[in-house]
Length: 178
Image (cartoon, rainbow, N blue to C red; front, side, top):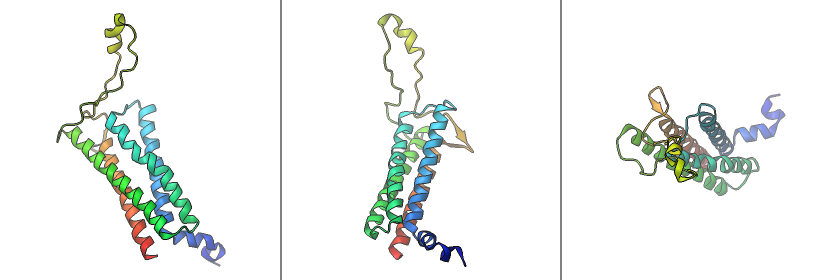
């Protein structure tokens, strides 16, 4: 007896492209966020404002992908699954654009936003203002803090986001045919 006949729900889930795509996107989003927080908290590579904005798509993809996967596992109507996958794909494409824009700023292809500074916060009294300003670390959007194989974290974000968009598109195409 094969595994598919022993456990019909496994065979049904294996043939469920919306479940597969949404689960993959959720796992990729979780891993990417974990990596971003690892770089920030363990390796002390502080994010610039554009880096922080690029996390928004992952913060959306994590619960939305989990919801779409759950709905797909419960045989939700095809239009609901397609809308969920479309939203995941659009968020990923928008984030790929933002990551590409940020990488272009890092390479000097175009000017970045003028607000790429870290929050100043409480600087204390006027007497120690200059001393406190010396301790503020400004994280600029146009300076690469880390590269691997010649690609910055913004570049990897663009590539990961394109992968997520491709998975969402695959899931949609297969769900339409199912």
